[in-house]
Length: 400
Ligand code: AMP
Ligand code: MG
Image 1 (spheres, rainbow, N blue to C red):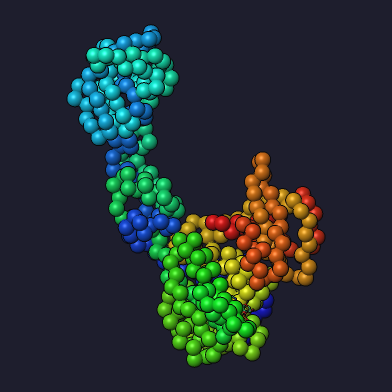
Image 2 (tube, rainbow, N blue to C red):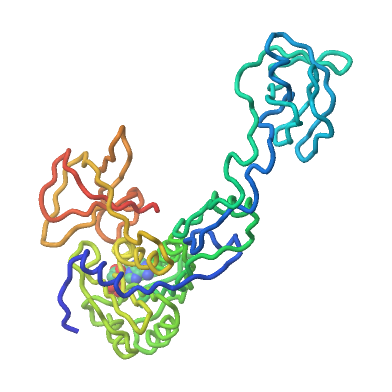
């Protein structure tokens, strides 16, 4: 497998070129979260559906409160869900709660704190003249109008909007089914206390969580030991999914058997080294329409390779209009240098300050240091060189 080392942007281009669009599926609303809409959604009713009070108070005729204080006769009480039975005649008002339909004739709601109850069902209006406090029928959208376009990512607000326009199901891009496999004889589960030479398996948790955040559900295939039989069985199982993520076992060590097993199982390797730091030993292959990633064993390297190469692929497959959004332009606030000849993805803390993004590098002890890395919320893509404060840099946000 004498493939050349390729630059990260070429690697990404190759991955995206092989990532298939998975088509659409119609799912219940709760399952649409994180998905990409595959249809335009129209309102089936006006929103709001009726003129509705935005306050707890009294529905009045503006003419009646032109001179203050004014005394009005309360003709009925309208809690949310009630329908008015009468129109307001001059001198009348209705007690009304937030969300209740405004009675015909009323053109303002006076908040209760600007009123005073009087004996005999009368009310004194002390202040008026502010906003009408009425949400008008159809002011958010008209029946038949498009409220969501295809390509829109479904979040909690979109789920609420879909519910408001009467949708219980919606078409979204099918999410790829992902399998996550860790490899290594040294790995023990998070619940175990590591013995001599053992370490806890953090990559499975990282990759499962990263998939989940990307809006994709992954199956955890556990840990394969560093022998061909176990690798063959578990990788074979993983190859039944749309995407297989294997961590570890792909560098130059004697027990790094993953590439051999990929080869035996018919995976066509497209690249096996990327000119990036961390993440050099990152492998990408395909079998038919399926994508296979061999990610570096070190947890930080695995996470960086996921962000740079896997995340955009998952997004493309589920129909995202912008699978690999352009990096954020930020101003560096500290000084740093990148040695060697590889593009570095440097953990950084990115924040919006005034009208610009600022990035400060976060110190880490290398590609196994999750302690340092957990303080970062972005990666700075830096070519080798020396960087001084004020330099413009490109940042890839991690918290997406
Ligand atoms: P490898 O690529 O298998 O040689 O692994 C490189 C480094 O990453 C070694 O120090 C491994 O112990 C570590 N490593 C591999 N897999 C995991 C994992 N699932 N969780 C945490 N560390 C790992
Ligand atoms: Mg290993």
